[in-house]
Amino acid sequence: MRPSGSGLHFPWSRRQLQQVVLHADTPGGKIYNLVIFGAILLSVVTLLLEPQPRLFSAGIQATGPLGGIERFCLGIFVVDYALHLSLSPRPWAYARSFYGLIDLMAVVFFFVPRINSGLLLWVFKFGRILRVFKLLRLIDEADRLVTSLKASARRIAVFIFFVLILQVVLGYLMVLVESSNANSQFENVGHGVYWAVVTMTTVGYGDYVPQTLLGRLLAVVVMLLGFGIIAIPTGIISYEAVRQGQGDQRRCQRCHQIGHRRDAIYCDRCGAVLPQPALPAAQ
Image (cartoon, rainbow, N blue to C red; front, top):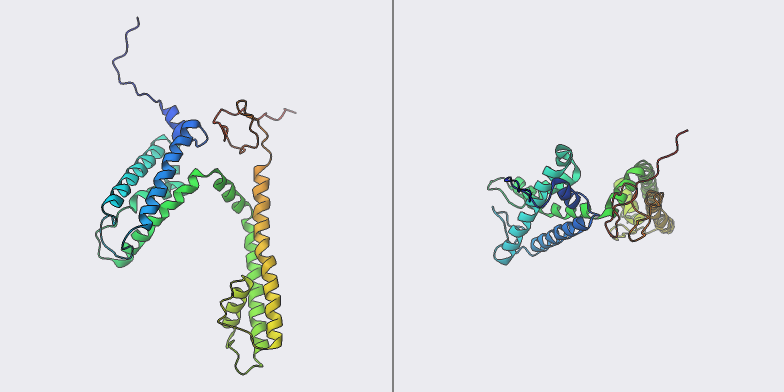
């Protein structure tokens, strides 16, 4: 028999821990993310059940069972952040990334410091709700949505700029049309632009209402424009999302699932290793 080594042996290697903590599509990673998902929901529920959320005082606000749940979730978040920081191939890049900052704030903002500044206390109290953004890291579709928003950001920005110009023109036109009415509520261009924004977004507060016939006809036109204007950004983002989801036809050898993410290493359904994409033939 071979003598056993005298050193310490850990049941899991660093590579195995990375597959569980850093890869959400492995079997172990799915269980790990389910635990984190439950901890996030528990912490948000305890935050919503906080008896006096407007009271600025030091320490964790929840007491009794809620306080115990808060401390339990805090322990899970601390372990999760430490694991990601130690297992990430680029720890500092993770610490400076969006998800790294969210994970850090989920830990830091659990506590309200003992300071006398009302503004800083408000920041720390408000920062506690930011832990809900940890859910984005656990949803694969969130990455696709972010990628789609980045790809269509320029077109959406140009579209929003055009809409702002259109609202200024329509607001100014409404002020001119309603100027013939002595009891007009549109006293300046700011009122008209505010009305145009509220009307075009189909909110309709009703605090500024056109009284003349031409003003009401213009309001109908703005309302009809609102339906089409709201739909255009949705179409742009949807097109980018569909385009991002196309192109990867690798089939899982275990469950025969197709349509995985382009950068996926493991199957989204069963967690098996996916075949590597074929390299283009050399010319």
